[in-house]
Amino acid sequence: MYSFRDPILITGVAGFIGHAVAKKFISSGFNIIGIDNLNNYYNKNLKIKRIDIINKNTINIKNKLYFKELDIEDINSLENVFNEFKPKVVINLAAQAGVRYSLKNPDAYVKSNLVGFVNILECCKKFKINNLIYASSSSVYGSNTNLPFSETQVVNHPVSLYAATKKSNELIAHTYSHLYKIPTTALRFFTVYGPWGRPDMAPMIFAKSIMNNQPIKIFNNGLMSRDFTYIDDVSEAVFRCALKPAELNKNFDKSKPDPSTSFAPYRIFNVGNSSPIKLLDFVELLEESLGIKAIKELHPMQPGDVVETLSDTSALENWINFRPITSFKDGIKLFADWYLNYSNHNLF
Image: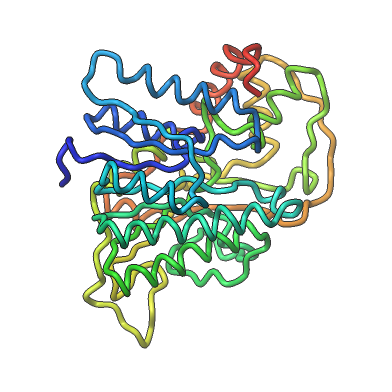
């Protein structure tokens, strides 16, 4: 267990998951060093507002967020942060997100998700951190149709560059865990949603279209489902994993290797709700929460997309005695209430 005085470094702190994780740590008594490049992938006002929300959580408590605007591709600036604050735990949530955007701008994924990630690992090595948690994705399961998705399954068939970079992160992290004994934990997030979410994801896209009486695009003619995972459940999982570094598997069998563990201090966990929601049911619940009917347009499958996702989170529950529990009906209502309150604030 780490001292409350030990600073936690969170990259991508102005992002959807990053800001929620920062709030969780600060409310639990930790100081946070938060870095973010505040890029223009979507409206910067939303990112800046998230930082404001984190800071509001620090009122009447001693702990706070130390925010620095920088890019993890900038190794010199990154090393300066490590040297100045000397974090014991690093939570890397900085990445170029989005499956479809990776078809248009692959260079952004190489720079942030590969170069930037190696920079993080190099700093973890140089400054001898005790634990690295980093964001992977359910997209690594790619064309796999063996549901539910388990961390023990081989994931060698990604269907998007974004997924390939996340799989690469897991491979690179294992190398550093083996060579330099850095405990690393990959968290494969399954369709995270909730208040303060990303404007490029379905809940925000659909809500905006519904409120503006514009058609929403239903891909694969609605024959899709997603394992939606509420943001507060995700931040709780990250928090608990950050306080429990990965350990080597003493029973690891090199003749029958388990991809989720290793002879090095390395772990992979799914973070999902294990309760997939059909796309049309999702739209219906969102309509109900917003109080407006949607105009639906049916479209074929998009390149890089998958039909369904479903997580097996038994390994996560065994590791940290927690699994996501928020029902989609409750979560989407909380999202819709937030959206209605902030839809006129020039955030998305």
